[in-house]
Image (tube, rainbow, N blue to C red; front, side, top):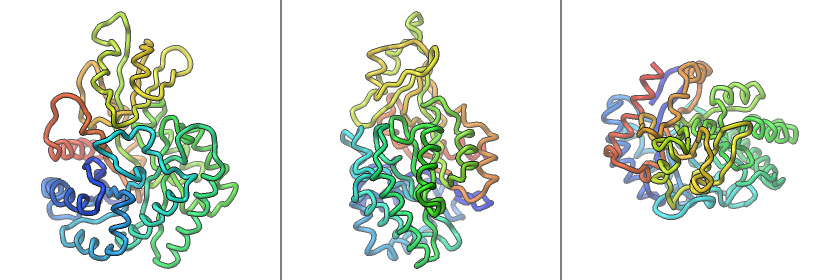
Length: 367
């Protein structure tokens, strides 16, 4: 939905299983329509689209028909989640979620298809965003990823010349990837822009608040520092991670409390801050096996209004001043992203009710 000053609020459709275009359309009809009816029945409602490689290939030849479907039902789109390439629910994803990464031509081709789709869907005067993998999993830089991104920036320039629509590919820093912190992200963009300053117009950052919290960094500082460095931050995913203070001498704060959050689907990178530098674990079971004392942060997207003591969420770290600063800059895409809803343990409200509660939680903070 429109928030004024060119800003938009939406939730990401990656919370709904489905890889084909039919499944995406069904999710819009069944779930997004119910959310729209409850939260903004008389105004256009923004969709945080998620299109797999399969859905993108199916949609590209009939994108005009899809736009008519959105228009007829009061929807519009300014952003696409182009991070997961293939199946994202119902099977083991883990490290495979980054594949193909930016070292592979398949990632470039897929993202450019998403850009061509989005250029057709964008309302007049809007800039589009496509969130994508932070180059690749692993900290060892691979030059071919930078080459691919610079090549894609050139193609996005051609799309803008042909259609008048600017599309920004927004790299999403995430723990254990090439871009996973303020420092690693700034270092990468220094190299990228030094190679070709024109990339500033078409390559930026998708700031995921959950990911910043996991590495014990501030979303507010990320936003400021990236912006000061000339890195576009057009998309912010409003999300929360798990946190818990672990002490082996207190049963209620034992790491065993986190065992229900271990699942075979998603990767849950974990950081533990005790004395000195945070300890890093590639997945939650690894951290539980070592069971260090300290404050734990776990890459597990829980609803913004969630809480099940002794395990808490980092939603309280989403400062009002940060959100006001984001909105004041204008032309930002704020997307609630809780893709792991299906594997959150314990009793849960119906999916539509949970989405509505998150959007209302955020609208209250924005107000």
